[in-house]
Amino acid sequence: MATDAAEIWRHCFCNWPAELERRGVLVTSFGEQIAFDGFATSDDLLLLERRAPDAVGARTVLVAYRNVEALKIVDVTKAKTFASMGFTAPPSSPRKA
Image (cartoon, rainbow, N blue to C red; front, top):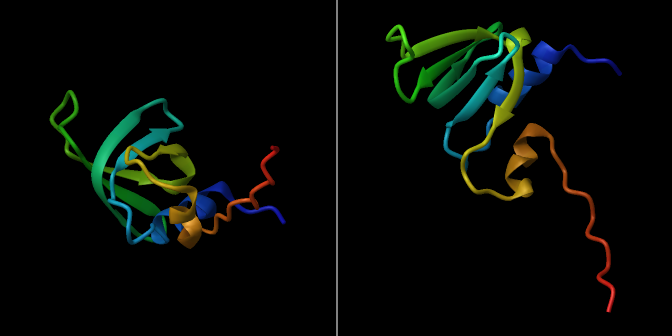
């Protein structure tokens, strides 16, 4: 089943884990890494609140989901935190004695 990358990213942000702070670093298709401390979603765009203004003083950024390449999580967390986004951890393999 092929899914549009923009829809995958929209799903990710719309299903952000409640126990995880809404912060991280967004990597865009135009090569920018945007550190953010908050975000809001719409059907087509992601609104990011920058931690600090960029070189021209902008603090708020609107990014089309199709321009999202990666998301870096800055908080220490466990894989199970991301279950609300659809992630599942593989079963643990038995440890060798």
